[in-house]
Amino acid sequence: MDAAGDDEGGGPMTYAEIEQYFNSLGLEGPTAQQRIDCIFSIIISLLPPPLVPAPEAAGDDSDDDSFSLTSSDSEASGSGADPLALHPAAIGDGTDHISRLPDALLSNIISRLPTLEAARTVVLSTRWRGVWAATPLLVDDAHLVGADGPSGIPIVRAVSRCVTAHPGPVRSVRVTRVSFYCQEYVLQRLLADLADKGVQDLILFNRPWPLNMPLPEDILRCASLERLYLGVWQFPEINSAHLPLFNKLRDIGLFHCIVRDESVNALLAHCPKLEVLSIVLSYGSPSRLHIVSRSLRVAVDWNSTLDEVVVQDAPCLERLILQTLERRRPIKIVGAPRLEVLGFLDLNLHELQIGGTVIRAGMNVRARTTVPSLKILAVTVHFTRNQEAKMLPTLFKCFPHLEALHVLAIPSKSIDSDHDLEFWESLCSCECLESHLKTVMIHGCLVHSNEIGFLQYIIREGKVLKAVGVDPSPNNSFAIDFVLASFGENDAASSDVSSGESDGDSDAASSGVSSGDVFHARVDGRFLFQNAIDMTLDNPFCVDDVLVS
Image 1 (spheres, helix red, strand yellow):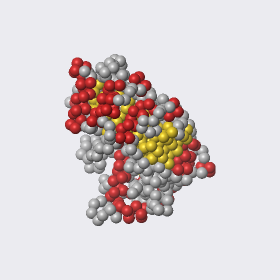
Image 2: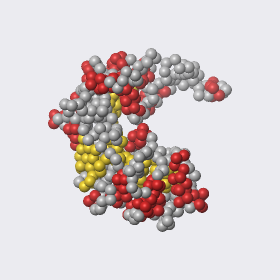
Image 3: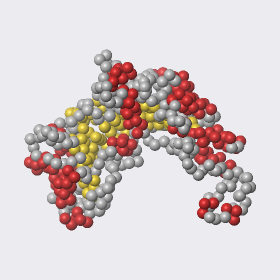
């Protein structure tokens, strides 16, 4: 049962129904509140780090009690040198040298301080008050937590007061530690002030409960936003009165939110600079992700219960990242001429459609059912299931220019496969293996004969293969030995150990790889999500690790 899925009436489950469901799981174990708090902790762990780390807790034994903003404290005082001899004019002259710095530099200093410390600079001098007023405000509720721990209502008001009192623009606001329940007025005032003061970066999460708390429509007036992450809200409906939307927005993440399909479609269609869309742990709403966007580059479906994902018209889309719960759904690729990264494509849960055609194992692949732009593919497969294993050679033909393949092998106790080594030995090569595939990473263990057969096929037909990654599990010893042996005794002994692709010769003998790297491969879901939205990384599925030699 989905934590916020659809009830029998077709609408989102209410807070009371979700609480009743969790409590019905048994008298022993976590309560409903504890279960939701656990989900919330997972969501928070996926967020990027704060721009300014939270200050150390009160009572910390530090030696900074005498810190001042004047130059009377010498950097050499702890080295045994005579401060007076080094800086004869600095000791005791009372001159505020820092305040003589240019306004731009002082503003930069203030912007790197925790919220309260930055605000306290106004007491230094009239000069600092002016700089503070002109410095874009950074507010983080982690900076406002007292020594006694977080206290919801005071922090809610403190965040709002920080924004209201600041005379200048607002750069970034991060709220992840408080509940807005029974604080609707404070919430509405906060969003109205943020809209008026040109907030650029907003991370706004509501500590549950309730899960369906409405987010005020003032959020749609924040036209200056460049990044927006929302967590545990009921997103407002978008209609023609709200258009145009977020003209500067580049990155939006909806975490465990209730969002109508029409609102998601409007965000995609009417945010002209939107590049990254992430839907995280959203249950039941939205029900479908239908991508029509002229600017979107990355779409992420992370553990949500979408019924389907359709890439209809996305001329700039480069990445489609999927992390799927146990829920079957079609993945339809219609218009994505620049799609380069796809995964993890679950061969059990996902029905892949390309150009309106369902891709099936062993089918005759034609031009209209190929995606020539795809370079990186990650798949989840049970090799012991016949149809899943047979899909892999078909995918090589659907993605003829594939350069990197990640395979997450799922173990299975039951074997319903009627093929093993003979199936893989009978396969011919294809354009992908002949000319393009350079890197293969196996996550999980290859134990059964048909799994080893797949590895043999890849190495045998991979004419330009340079790097093979293998999970370091002891259960994978046979696969590791086979890969090392395939490199040749001399090449395996002298090959470089690297986490990336080898710079060695790209030509390989027809019998398999002649030079390259062998390295460990693993998957860390949290790391993968953070990488998925980082366009500076060429491959979001790569993880640096200790390597085998």
